[in-house]
Length: 263
Image (cartoon, rainbow, N blue to C red; front, side, top):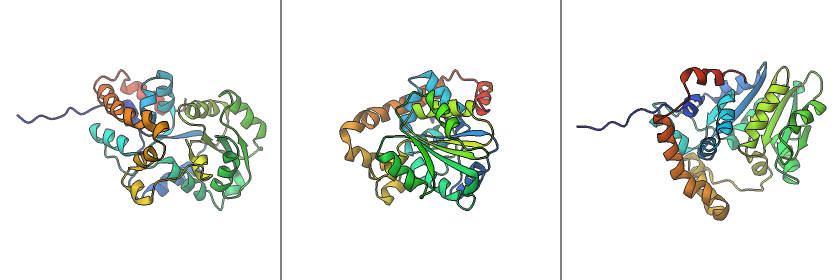
Protein backbone atom coordinates (compact mmCIF):
# COMPACT_ATOMS: atom_id res chain seq x y z
CA UNK A 1 0.00 0.00 0.00
CA UNK A 2 1.35 3.39 -0.96
CA UNK A 3 1.57 5.86 1.92
CA UNK A 4 0.36 9.37 1.18
CA UNK A 5 1.32 12.14 3.57
CA UNK A 6 -1.89 13.88 4.67
CA UNK A 7 -2.42 17.37 3.31
CA UNK A 8 -1.87 19.96 6.02
CA UNK A 9 -3.92 23.02 6.83
CA UNK A 10 -1.84 25.67 8.52
CA UNK A 11 -3.47 29.13 8.87
CA UNK A 12 -0.16 31.00 8.61
CA UNK A 13 0.73 29.24 5.38
CA UNK A 14 -2.81 29.70 4.08
CA UNK A 15 -2.52 33.41 4.88
CA UNK A 16 0.44 33.91 2.51
CA UNK A 17 -0.08 35.95 -0.63
CA UNK A 18 1.82 33.95 -3.23
CA UNK A 19 2.91 35.71 -6.39
CA UNK A 20 3.93 34.15 -9.70
CA UNK A 21 7.49 34.62 -10.91
CA UNK A 22 7.65 37.75 -13.03
CA UNK A 23 4.30 39.06 -11.76
CA UNK A 24 5.64 41.18 -8.90
CA UNK A 25 4.87 44.37 -10.83
CA UNK A 26 1.14 43.92 -10.21
CA UNK A 27 1.71 43.60 -6.48
CA UNK A 28 4.01 46.64 -6.43
CA UNK A 29 1.34 48.73 -8.13
CA UNK A 30 -1.31 47.44 -5.72
CA UNK A 31 0.82 48.47 -2.74
CA UNK A 32 1.56 51.85 -4.25
CA UNK A 33 -2.15 52.62 -4.59
CA UNK A 34 -3.40 51.60 -1.12
CA UNK A 35 -6.41 53.60 0.08
CA UNK A 36 -6.35 52.66 3.76
CA UNK A 37 -3.65 51.97 6.40
CA UNK A 38 -2.09 48.76 5.05
CA UNK A 39 0.47 46.39 6.53
CA UNK A 40 3.04 44.30 4.67
CA UNK A 41 5.20 41.58 6.16
CA UNK A 42 7.35 38.61 5.25
CA UNK A 43 7.18 35.10 6.67
CA UNK A 44 10.41 33.14 6.94
CA UNK A 45 11.43 30.13 9.01
CA UNK A 46 12.50 32.28 11.95
CA UNK A 47 9.27 34.28 12.00
CA UNK A 48 7.23 31.11 11.76
CA UNK A 49 9.02 29.68 14.80
CA UNK A 50 8.43 32.85 16.83
CA UNK A 51 4.76 32.80 15.89
CA UNK A 52 4.40 29.33 17.36
CA UNK A 53 5.91 30.19 20.72
CA UNK A 54 3.71 33.23 21.38
CA UNK A 55 0.02 33.42 20.44
CA UNK A 56 0.06 37.24 20.35
CA UNK A 57 2.88 37.17 17.80
CA UNK A 58 0.96 34.63 15.74
CA UNK A 59 -2.12 36.86 15.77
CA UNK A 60 -0.09 39.85 14.61
CA UNK A 61 1.25 37.87 11.64
CA UNK A 62 -2.28 36.77 10.78
CA UNK A 63 -3.52 40.35 11.01
CA UNK A 64 -1.09 41.67 8.40
CA UNK A 65 -2.86 42.62 5.17
CA UNK A 66 -0.07 41.20 3.00
CA UNK A 67 2.18 38.35 4.14
CA UNK A 68 4.76 37.26 1.56
CA UNK A 69 6.82 34.06 1.35
CA UNK A 70 10.47 34.40 2.29
CA UNK A 71 12.83 31.44 2.08
CA UNK A 72 13.17 27.80 1.22
CA UNK A 73 11.68 26.57 4.50
CA UNK A 74 8.37 28.31 3.90
CA UNK A 75 8.50 27.04 0.31
CA UNK A 76 8.50 23.46 1.61
CA UNK A 77 5.73 24.34 4.08
CA UNK A 78 3.61 25.63 1.17
CA UNK A 79 4.11 22.37 -0.69
CA UNK A 80 3.10 20.33 2.37
CA UNK A 81 -0.05 22.45 2.60
CA UNK A 82 -0.91 21.87 -1.04
CA UNK A 83 0.01 25.38 -2.18
CA UNK A 84 2.22 26.29 -5.12
CA UNK A 85 5.07 28.31 -3.50
CA UNK A 86 5.61 30.61 -6.49
CA UNK A 87 8.11 33.46 -6.18
CA UNK A 88 10.41 33.93 -3.21
CA UNK A 89 9.86 37.53 -2.06
CA UNK A 90 12.32 38.30 0.72
CA UNK A 91 12.19 41.79 2.15
CA UNK A 92 15.83 42.65 1.44
CA UNK A 93 15.16 42.42 -2.31
CA UNK A 94 11.47 43.29 -2.46
CA UNK A 95 11.48 46.47 -0.36
CA UNK A 96 14.05 48.33 -2.53
CA UNK A 97 12.00 47.33 -5.59
CA UNK A 98 8.90 48.75 -3.92
CA UNK A 99 10.64 52.03 -3.06
CA UNK A 100 11.91 52.30 -6.64
CA UNK A 101 8.37 51.67 -7.89
CA UNK A 102 7.31 54.90 -6.16
CA UNK A 103 9.62 56.95 -8.40
CA UNK A 104 7.88 59.64 -10.39
CA UNK A 105 5.10 60.05 -7.85
CA UNK A 106 7.06 60.75 -4.67
CA UNK A 107 5.35 64.08 -4.05
CA UNK A 108 2.42 62.39 -2.33
CA UNK A 109 4.57 60.12 -0.14
CA UNK A 110 6.40 60.81 3.09
CA UNK A 111 9.09 58.31 4.11
CA UNK A 112 9.77 57.05 7.62
CA UNK A 113 12.56 54.73 8.77
CA UNK A 114 11.91 53.22 12.20
CA UNK A 115 14.48 50.75 13.45
CA UNK A 116 18.08 49.72 14.07
CA UNK A 117 20.45 52.40 15.49
CA UNK A 118 22.87 55.07 14.35
CA UNK A 119 24.90 55.35 12.21
CA UNK A 120 23.21 52.53 10.30
CA UNK A 121 19.74 54.06 10.69
CA UNK A 122 20.54 57.24 8.76
CA UNK A 123 22.98 55.62 6.33
CA UNK A 124 20.63 52.76 5.51
CA UNK A 125 17.57 54.99 5.13
CA UNK A 126 19.44 57.43 2.86
CA UNK A 127 20.43 54.59 0.53
CA UNK A 128 17.08 52.81 0.68
CA UNK A 129 15.12 56.00 -0.07
CA UNK A 130 17.73 57.12 -2.62
CA UNK A 131 18.35 60.54 -1.17
CA UNK A 132 14.71 61.45 -0.65
CA UNK A 133 13.85 63.26 2.60
CA UNK A 134 12.89 60.93 5.45
CA UNK A 135 12.07 60.97 9.15
CA UNK A 136 13.85 58.45 11.34
CA UNK A 137 13.73 56.95 14.83
CA UNK A 138 15.72 54.11 16.34
CA UNK A 139 14.16 50.71 16.98
CA UNK A 140 14.60 50.59 20.76
CA UNK A 141 11.66 52.70 21.89
CA UNK A 142 8.49 51.42 23.46
CA UNK A 143 6.14 50.03 20.82
CA UNK A 144 3.35 52.41 21.86
CA UNK A 145 5.54 55.45 21.17
CA UNK A 146 5.83 54.95 17.40
CA UNK A 147 2.25 55.92 16.45
CA UNK A 148 2.75 59.14 18.43
CA UNK A 149 6.08 59.77 16.67
CA UNK A 150 4.56 59.29 13.20
CA UNK A 151 1.51 61.45 14.02
CA UNK A 152 3.80 64.22 15.29
CA UNK A 153 5.91 64.28 12.11
CA UNK A 154 3.36 63.37 9.41
CA UNK A 155 2.70 66.20 6.97
CA UNK A 156 -0.95 66.91 6.06
CA UNK A 157 -2.04 65.29 2.81
CA UNK A 158 0.96 62.96 2.61
CA UNK A 159 0.79 59.16 2.40
CA UNK A 160 3.29 57.73 4.90
CA UNK A 161 5.57 54.93 3.70
CA UNK A 162 6.89 53.49 6.97
CA UNK A 163 9.76 50.99 6.94
CA UNK A 164 9.95 49.11 10.24
CA UNK A 165 13.41 47.64 10.72
CA UNK A 166 13.34 46.63 14.37
CA UNK A 167 13.19 42.86 13.86
CA UNK A 168 10.58 40.23 14.59
CA UNK A 169 8.25 40.23 16.46
CA UNK A 170 8.35 43.89 17.53
CA UNK A 171 7.98 45.29 14.01
CA UNK A 172 4.76 43.32 13.39
CA UNK A 173 3.35 44.59 16.69
CA UNK A 174 4.24 48.18 15.79
CA UNK A 175 2.76 47.77 12.29
CA UNK A 176 -0.61 46.78 13.76
CA UNK A 177 -0.50 49.67 16.26
CA UNK A 178 0.24 52.13 13.44
CA UNK A 179 -2.55 50.70 11.32
CA UNK A 180 -5.04 51.26 14.12
CA UNK A 181 -3.81 54.79 14.78
CA UNK A 182 -3.54 56.18 11.24
CA UNK A 183 -6.33 57.43 9.00
CA UNK A 184 -6.30 57.37 5.22
CA UNK A 185 -3.70 55.81 2.91
CA UNK A 186 -0.55 54.50 4.60
CA UNK A 187 1.84 51.61 4.09
CA UNK A 188 3.67 49.94 6.98
CA UNK A 189 6.46 47.60 5.81
CA UNK A 190 8.03 45.06 8.18
CA UNK A 191 11.62 45.12 6.95
CA UNK A 192 13.76 43.20 9.46
CA UNK A 193 17.41 44.03 8.82
CA UNK A 194 16.72 46.01 5.63
CA UNK A 195 18.34 49.22 6.95
CA UNK A 196 21.39 47.35 8.22
CA UNK A 197 21.80 45.67 4.84
CA UNK A 198 21.30 48.98 3.02
CA UNK A 199 23.98 50.56 5.23
CA UNK A 200 26.25 47.57 4.49
CA UNK A 201 26.49 46.74 8.17
CA UNK A 202 25.88 43.12 7.16
CA UNK A 203 26.99 41.53 3.89
CA UNK A 204 24.62 39.59 1.67
CA UNK A 205 25.25 36.23 0.10
CA UNK A 206 26.41 36.12 -3.55
CA UNK A 207 23.52 36.22 -6.00
CA UNK A 208 23.77 32.52 -7.04
CA UNK A 209 23.49 31.50 -3.38
CA UNK A 210 20.44 33.73 -2.93
CA UNK A 211 18.80 32.37 -6.05
CA UNK A 212 18.80 28.80 -4.70
CA UNK A 213 17.41 29.92 -1.34
CA UNK A 214 20.56 29.28 0.69
CA UNK A 215 21.29 32.77 1.96
CA UNK A 216 20.54 31.52 5.48
CA UNK A 217 23.51 29.12 5.24
CA UNK A 218 25.79 31.95 4.13
CA UNK A 219 24.69 34.08 7.06
CA UNK A 220 25.20 31.18 9.45
CA UNK A 221 28.77 30.77 8.22
CA UNK A 222 29.39 34.50 8.66
CA UNK A 223 27.83 34.74 12.13
CA UNK A 224 27.77 31.22 13.61
CA UNK A 225 27.49 32.22 17.26
CA UNK A 226 24.63 34.68 16.78
CA UNK A 227 22.66 32.56 14.33
CA UNK A 228 23.32 29.04 15.66
CA UNK A 229 20.05 28.89 17.60
CA UNK A 230 18.04 30.47 14.79
CA UNK A 231 19.10 27.94 12.15
CA UNK A 232 20.80 24.83 13.58
CA UNK A 233 18.18 24.45 16.29
CA UNK A 234 15.45 26.49 14.61
CA UNK A 235 15.19 24.55 11.34
CA UNK A 236 14.24 21.20 12.97
CA UNK A 237 11.80 23.12 15.20
CA UNK A 238 10.30 24.74 12.14
CA UNK A 239 9.40 21.45 10.47
CA UNK A 240 8.04 20.09 13.74
CA UNK A 241 5.75 23.11 14.04
CA UNK A 242 4.70 22.88 10.37
CA UNK A 243 3.50 19.30 10.80
CA UNK A 244 2.07 19.74 14.30
CA UNK A 245 0.09 22.86 13.50
CA UNK A 246 -0.96 21.73 10.06
CA UNK A 247 -2.50 18.56 11.48
CA UNK A 248 -3.91 19.99 14.69
CA UNK A 249 -4.73 23.61 14.00
CA UNK A 250 -7.21 25.27 16.34
CA UNK A 251 -7.69 28.32 14.10
CA UNK A 252 -10.91 27.86 12.17
CA UNK A 253 -11.34 28.97 8.57
CA UNK A 254 -13.90 31.56 9.71
CA UNK A 255 -11.36 33.01 12.16
CA UNK A 256 -8.74 33.10 9.41
CA UNK A 257 -11.14 35.22 7.36
CA UNK A 258 -11.44 37.68 10.24
CA UNK A 259 -7.66 38.05 10.34
CA UNK A 260 -7.62 38.73 6.60
CA UNK A 261 -9.66 41.86 7.19
CA UNK A 262 -8.19 45.06 8.60
CA UNK A 263 -7.50 44.62 12.33
